[in-house]
Length: 445
Image (cartoon, rainbow, N blue to C red):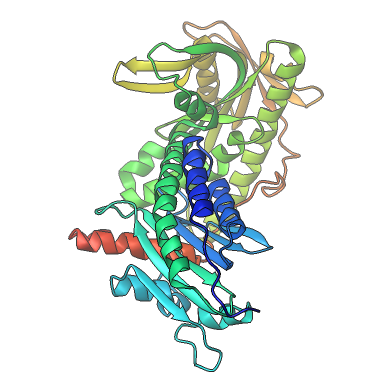
């Protein structure tokens, strides 16, 4: 391998900067932007072997995303759930921790095999043939905990030349601007999806934000509710009540947010979900059967949860679910400057009444005759006709749940509290340092 420094083309680096600007304006996601950037840097002649970038994220599950690009191997993305605990020893002895602890913008080290590694990660990098390493921190703004951290590594025998370092510092600023736009776009998408649901979030982001805007759709409808929550709220502490409510939602509501289902809103200790479908029989059958399958899964998951609660000396969580199908209004209502996006109409009132009837009948899941008619050969127990105030007479049925699936048979991941990645620890520390500087140590995690 040559030990001479190669000249860096300013023209090609400008092309990389132009691509970053165009990619950001086009709204490319963070992974596409980072991967394309690294590949273009390598194509421009920079002898990069490895690039690592970490970004803080406002997300209900993650505090950070990390991207590691290795020449010829592509890119790996890290994203781990929040977890209580202290940073790992490996992180505390990392270049990133050294950077943040000493309030440094950059840290450069030549990796000499004959010298004991200053940081443990250097042992791994040497095995990759890395000869020169430069880490950096680049906040997105002066008083924000959001930002970018990362490192550049080369396997060139000559290491980084001054012209290479200069080129990396210049392009780093362009990268920060482009990735900030991508992070903010992702943040908006995360918030819309988290608080409104996938379809409603996309509608709002696409501009459907005026009061009265929306559609009339046909859908299978689900209304769920936790029993005994008022008594629990009065007798248990706030943390116990909220933890129990979240256990209920994890067990019962989660299956209705998959396979075509969308939870439109949480209403106190209950929720409403929809399975949109076209106005003809085959699509209605698909929607109703998916909702019924989710009810089977919810029942199995609740049985599993209550068994675990019993082992802990806790009482059972009881619930009621109503299933119906019909036309609903789907859109924005409220004040001109404070809206909600949900479903409305007589069918919603009917499914709510069905859910309430689970208090009368000894069955946790009840459905209308219309709903059951779309569910094929499933076994149903007819309970009777109900005259509901202000609503047409409903024939009430209960499905046979004896063949309910095991709680893990739906193929959906059951997220656990995984270990923290280096990327997450980096950005947590970066965030906490910003909070400490702002005089708010109480929010440190």
